[in-house]
Image (cartoon, rainbow, N blue to C red; front, top):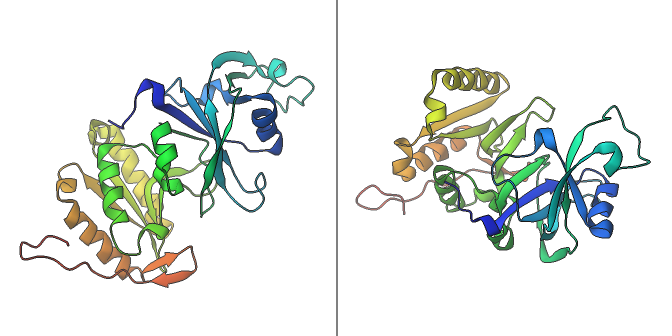
Length: 268
């Protein structure tokens, strides 16, 4: 299970407009649609705002967070009196009361376009994060693979976790997107019973076919395979090399060097 304690649970939520940031910073609240509220980690004890491009100039940052002191359900017309209903009359929201907001000493910057509406994580992860990818609090298998990726020379800048693709409303969330000079790579961890069910297997196959048809390479790793994470990383490194090397920040390609091995065949 992802690491969490009730008192540490934190929700990162996107603030799509300047007015939403003003609601947080000037009035001390944030809204979450009831019908799309994340189930994991709910109710959260802390909140952090993700400011996309347009809200924070040309940058995408997480820099403001605070403790949630209250959560109550309200209708849109009561939450936003005087604002256009925009076809959402009667829609229900959770109003998170956040009276005190703290600014991080070093903003957490997302280097590629991100539209994650919510990220269920912990305050500990927020305060320890060096990159946007460090915010995620996923399964032990995914965390194990992420740690291995960070340890592979030059790889981290070319990887995005829980990356939405394509950039449309109907998108898939990739466990890991690795950006290469040629084909990009979608790496998935299939470590729980869900992916073994017949319905899930069919859904995964349909998704994989779509990704391949869209020009991506796809790699899936099971619990058993990830017991030898070094071997998985070696396979991923080979695929990156076959796909032309890493594309740092989408522009500067670099071929991933193969890691040396010791006498037992383990990656150093």
